[in-house]
Image (cartoon, rainbow over all chains, first blue to last red; front, side):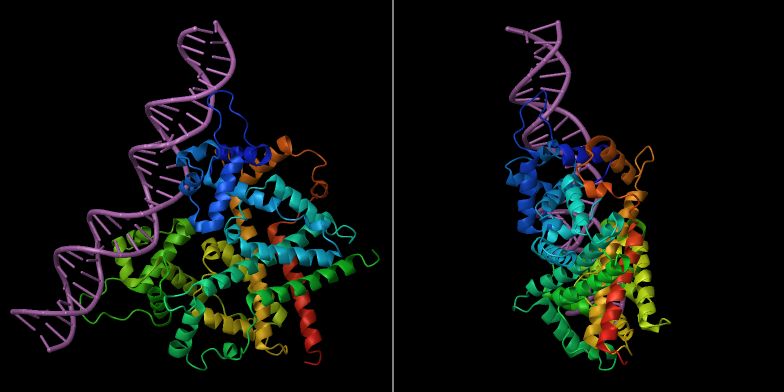
Amino acid sequence: MRTTRESIEATLDLLWTGLGRPERGPCHQLTVERVVDAAMATVEAEGAEALSMRKVAARLGVGAATLYTYVPDKAALLALMVDEMVGQAAPPHTRPGTWWEKVEAWAREDLASYRAHPWLVEVVNGPFAGPNGFAWTDSAIRMFDGTGLSAEEALAVVEAVDGLVQGHVAKVIAADRAQRWTDPEGRSFDTVQESYLLTQRIEVGRFPAIERLRAPLSPVETFEQALSWLLDGIERRITEHAPGD
Amino acid sequence: MRTTRESIEATLDLLWTGLGRPERGPCHQLTVERVVDAAMATVEAEGAEALSMRKVAARLGVGAATLYTYVPDKAALLALMVDEMVGQAAPPHTRPGTWWEKVEAWAREDLASYRAHPWLVEVVNGPFAGPNGFAWTDSAIRMFDGTGLSAEEALAVVEAVDGLVQGHVAKVIAADRAQRWTDPEGRSFDTVQESYLLTQRIEVGRFPAIERLRAPLSPVETFEQALSWLLDGIERRITEHAPGD
DNA sequence: CTGGAACTCCGTACACTGTTCTCCCTTAGT
DNA sequence: ACTAAGGGAGAACAGTGTACGGAGTTCCAG
């Protein structure tokens, strides 16, 4: 898992141009695409923590060391997986509606995609940018064509919304996991922790503001609120900035 | 790293009441606090990925298996570390100024704290809530005393801002790392990647919107923008909701 | 047609990881 | 003094990423 300069350039080559045929020696038995697909299948089935080179290799019917013919690193493999995943997302600027509707639809879809593929969260903020990532960012900036925002400002807005999504993703996924987990008697993690706290540990009056809570919002509802507030603020910025546009 | 019901309850006991003296057998050589402190020292010095039970044990001059007398799990140790860290943060509602100023100050300090202790990011969204976490949340809700917001809404606002912070934290930390990393010739990761892309791979016209970028904002500047937009939206909500308050 | 260079594939090995088992020895209560 | 509870820790287990070296394959130069 160590990053050397050689492996950086090898990874960038892989992202942008793929792997060429060898000029001598035996033909390739596999392709980079097949390796990436096998890695995606494993991670989809078993989660990010269970992704290992040996498992990917086993899925391809190949020795573990063979993967290093196609991919310099596990980090490079992850970068390829992320770019593949980004490539499957719809280009945001082609959605119908106003900039508000485009952003809202993209943000919701983004959250849903993270929930469906939780492994992405732990991996998406790697340092590498691939062609699909660039194409996506390009399209995202164009969501604000016609609003009068500069490209710089549009990118800042995109990163603001993306930041909000990613921040809530961690909470939503944690909540998903805490509900899915069950002990031998079938109780969820939340149930166990809540009953422990209520019956045993928390004295009345110790946390007065928390006691005022009656029906806290779910993480997804909180996300929807936060998104609308942020979009409100951005709208004010846009109308102030270019009122005649 | 497996979570069982026993280990959940043991962890909760540890968080809320600590570890009692043994009634028989030899005295404890260590305390839970010393184990947690040693773990914090290791993680502070070497990062989250390098934190291992053996290293913590070595720092205490003790065998690795001994730690399991004090702590049921690595997960429990991490939960204790997080609660300890949260306990060091200033209670948000005691800051001076309006709710806006309190939130802004807290958010900036939060971001700074994550940058100073990047290991927190990967660990803070665990399922466990300890006494310091509860106290902090309680204090955070109180930032909105006098605004007319209900406790539920106040909590939603807090989580919205926290989500924004956490989302940007990942980007800021990634940027920090990419700048700190250097190859044998002293070039940073960004430099290597950028020169690779500019000189070799990206044809003019492929990403027109990105080409319009002249001086993109830094991650921290983007965060400041996003925060002010979000606070704008929240202010609108507050004044609409309780205009006479 | 024949080296030999270049290359793929992969068994093995190394230095790690979290955790359990088992044994020894210290300690407190009776 | 005796017994049982329980702390301390060495060894082991099933994993991890990846470096190395050897075996076998393919192509090109002579």
